[in-house]
Amino acid sequence: MASSLVEYDMHSLRNGYISEVSNSEEILFRRFRPDGDDERQMGELVFNNAFLGESFEVICPCKQWFSEVVLTPYIKHQPENIHVAVHKPTGRLIGYLTGSLGGHQFEKVQYNMVRNKIVSLAVSLTLPWTFFQYSSRQFAAHVIFKGESERPTHPQTGVHWHFQVDKDFRGQGIGTQLLQRFIDDAVKADFGLIWAEVTSYPEKPPEYFQDRGWSIYDAKPTKIFGNHVDFPVDTLCITKPLSSFEAPMHAA
Image 1: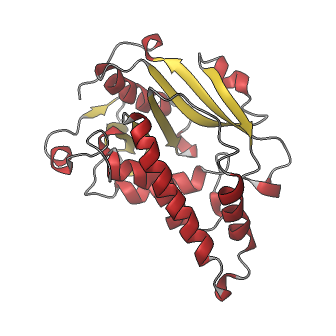
Image 2 (image 1 turned 180 degrees about the vertical axis):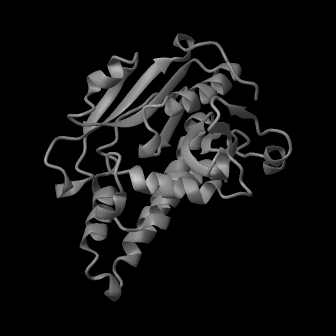
């Protein structure tokens, strides 16, 4: 299904392509390991932080499904562009970044995979024993009928990223380190632009990103969180020239 742009040789990932850098005595930064526990821990992390930094349970108590929607396209087609942060004393995965150097072609693959997952959730929620799962049905219906209209436009070129950091470890520069490692790879691959979709709300307005050098490419209001919030929420597409970042720091 995927082209050579998004296919990946898993053998090379297991044999020497993993780089490890420890920036403190307690945190190890390395690439994703497909044959370990990374995928499960990433799924836990994204589900527990997807509702504006809190658990997605109140929106849709479907942890396995949600983690597959968010992570599977990258794990299957861009695993070499996943970076993780591990708390060495406990072995706990405390942060990750998923990124794509696959361009518009990967976007198409991702869209089809996510769409199929959403439809499968909607179908499963028509079964009699799901009658009381109102929140899940509401979420699925919203994504199917309004999801695309609430998604901002984004550049057709460049690379994109998404990261999560455990709330117990925020404010320590972990997200910055993960992003820098991905940027190093993008610069070496001769890309010029980086972008991401982020959530904006009163505690994190557009100015939060602009003050950090990002430009707002597009913005769309979203009701994805339903009546669980009483303030406006927007999805932003933010962009930045890769030339504005520091020169590559890490070996691949």
